[in-house]
Length: 423
Image 1 (cartoon, rainbow, N blue to C red):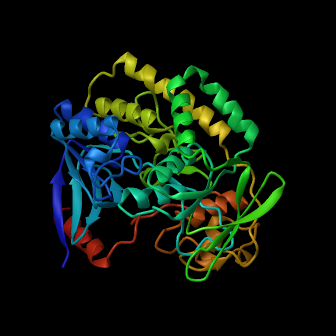
Image 2 (spheres, helix red, strand yellow):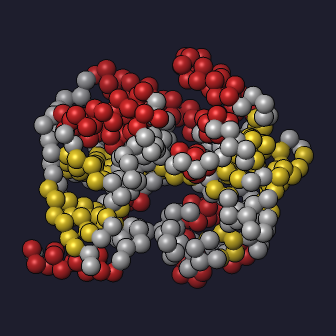
Image 3 (cartoon, rainbow, N blue to C red):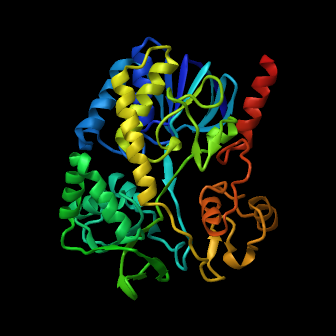
């Protein structure tokens, strides 16, 4: 039987990635009681995902150690299902968590954009970051034939990490046109550390060609993916594979912000110079405000944590953050998603409800698609198919409702009964 656990804090941070860790550290160091909520078994987010802290880069270890010293408390394996004024509701194993806190910092990160193609629902087909997460979680890719097809700078470090882990990279592709990638690379002249890092990543899989303007047409197999067909550079060809990582870049997780009533424009949460959202006493940091990499996420988290704690923010930190935002704008321009065509009619688009592309009418809205086909009503709550339908048809996102993730009815009853008792 589930039970309700009441917790109080001065600041609650939702999301335990780089932005959330930096925000929590800064706020706790300022003397505030801080609680971090995160779905993963360990704090670190997708970028600093780990089984053992010593496997992380020095910067990640330093921030995690700093968080430990700060006194902030972390609750892992906890999913936030609702956000109300002064109150956050979460579910964790066999208990419900209700956090009463006057100030909230959202650091909910980003997720991969999946564009459906025939065979994308086969076992061993996942996102580019999904393959990386699999390897970081302890799965062996040694000797496996792996193909990557993505969009944006995530492709390079994932390919490098897989090569280091012993994977046989049969193809590494980016759907972004070569002209935009070259212009972006040239713009890094003022950021030599980033440029040199990119060179090191590329050298790690130098035995595999890095193809630009290339994407997946289809995947085939019976019990799992066996081969992948690519197109690009005026040709189409097929590669045998054991694992395929395919995505079309990253998109910010804004569902919680939308549920809270924060202003969201062009797919990102709108914040001011101190990372404040349009909602009083709600801040946002990291990729929900725009995908810009770990350094920007950390600096935004620091700004949000200090401001939420009532501390002044050093001018130097704001300068670093603003430089990171300028870099993020260049990333967005270079790796923007060009208009995409529709996959074959029989291709599954909503995999939770098994809805094929042929079931949709381009004249609909997202709400109509949900009502007529149940797309977006499955366990993912539209996080996968909603973004795909937006890319395919241009439909605006539908409204967000609580609970944000599938939640046992007993958990909802428990929190409602407790709310009634204390009202």
